[in-house]
Amino acid sequence: MAASQAEKGARFRELHQRPGAFIIPNPWDAGSARILAALGFEALATTSAGFAFSLGRRDGSVGREEALAHCRDIVAASDLPVSADLEKCFGDAPEIVAETVRLAAAAGLAGCSVEDASGDSAKPIYDAGLAVERVAAAVEAARSLPFPFTLTARAENFLHGRPDLDDTIRRLQSFEKAGADVLYAPGLRDIATVRKVCSSLSKPVNVLAGAKGWAVSVEELAAAGVKRISLGGCLSRVALGALIRAAREMKERGTFSFGDEAATHAEVTAFMRG
Image (cartoon, rainbow, N blue to C red; front, side, top):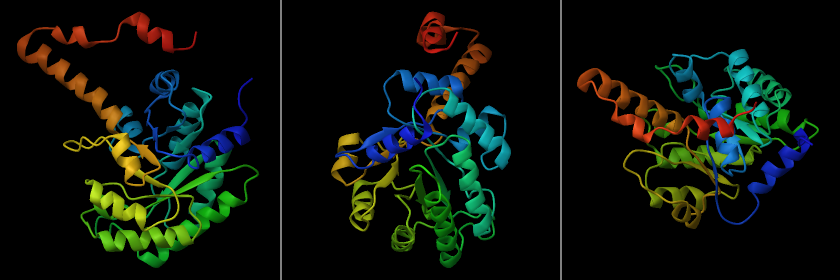
């Protein structure tokens, strides 16, 4: 029997409460979700970038209805709890953020994130006060649900040319005080910084792994205080990187040696539904 949404929500919440750190990989379509689930991961998270790339579009260009339809596809692909990357929740006003959280729950998700990146290149990060109001609205919507829904609050400074660690920590502390279940500052690139962020908070911290040149391990991140490790669009870019290399080999050299690295038809088929 398939797990209920309440069961998935409880399982997802429990992952954040047990000792150590866990990996929450980011599929970009139903097929990649099925593969990751079959390989033994305990939860999945969507990737706004990976999904946008699969549509031939840039990150940030997907609307709310499209994103939620994609979330439903990922939820339906396995029996795992799924958390969604919903960017800024598709609006500036706290009321829109709250509505998006309720719609996310209706899509079958076990959690979602809200970030303080505005999408405005002239002012890429929301003022601190508005950022906290948005998180508080998301938390209120999440708490109104009849099952555990894990709300992640993201401080986006390091992804938008503002590597201000003190401001990032203050924002995360404010989000924690507003009731967020998980805190996340994507773009951290060294263990000392990660440790400082984790030691400044009492709620679980998510860290983005998979950055080029940062060969960090689960054990190192767990020792620094990290609870959850996500990959963002990295796995989709790994797949696209293989495609680009194969295409260049065909075009520039006229050879097909990349086929040696491909999964067999039978291997991929074994992960899929009939």
